[in-house]
Image: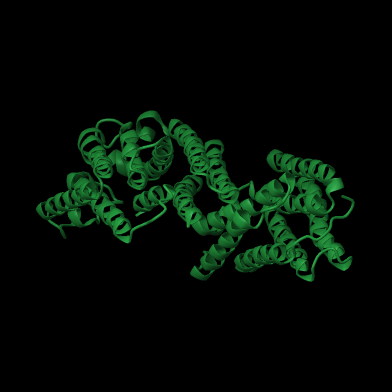
Length: 209
Length: 267
């Protein structure tokens, strides 16, 4: 497996600091469910960045990578729902738990086909929600335009998650060296887009709340 | 270096309304000298086993770049200067710094390290002294938050030392130094690491609540502690050399990040 370069470590450290900043100061004023969901998502990003710095790309060998990389978009999707469509927050949280269980069981049981069959719709739907909800709120005038950066971050994290998931499933979309060389930059771009989107696009109104 | 940071964090946690640079310099200088002195004395005493272990055989004493006499003089001088400076700064602070040095050099290194794997507990007690000393310097007394911070370091030490001892198990066996892994087996060592990780994270969060840290920093500590627990559980469920090394390194990052968070929070 390709070794981590010093530049990669620098990118990952910046990504870790951005995620830590979001956890410490970026979640003030949110409701409990949104805070917990965002903390899970950015917390996994932070710990993943640190482990990649410590262990290099070998950290991606762990069987829990697919599960954790699924928890990030699910956490963001539930957080966004709790923040902007609070009436559906409990439903979103319940669906996220079911989705996570549906992804976890086949991974632990070693059911490869079932694993892919659950992973694709879970990542796809969570990704669509993270991209779609910010776009809808911005177009409807409820959020300022910079909130679209959250949609960009959602798209990037969906891309990273799918690249990683298919690589782990033995059906890589790109070659392994290509994915690994992209990975640190992708993680940093994702985290910065999300953090700046949340910071610059403060909520104004909520839908259905 | 890490223990020095814990001392500075302990001082910062006291939230002194006025911080004099001379006090801060005295804290950093005295701790640096005392910790450095005890490390040199440890290397002086363990030069025989250091020369047997592959990991340590290139240190200055085993290779002859520094003579034992020079190392002993340097260790005593640094220790005496460190403790003396600490006593001048504040008697209680100096007493705790001396206790840390005594536990590390006399109890841990000279007496227990080659006799029992449980010497690691006394290494932990010694490791907890800088943060306790730093807080005592800031407050002028020892309180339960300082004890909790010291406990966080004490419980972190087994995670740090035992994962390290498992990685270099053959080295320790060759040198005849008993470790939990070599005496009770790797499984017991992994359980101890997992339990001590839980206790370290719990003590750190409890201390942070006691300090009155903001919610954001508590969330950060919870996330970092969660990572530690996840890795400890991982090495328990799926033991591997890579996972063990990851836990060892992450435990250091965890302690450093937690202490830096304590310092940043009060700025």
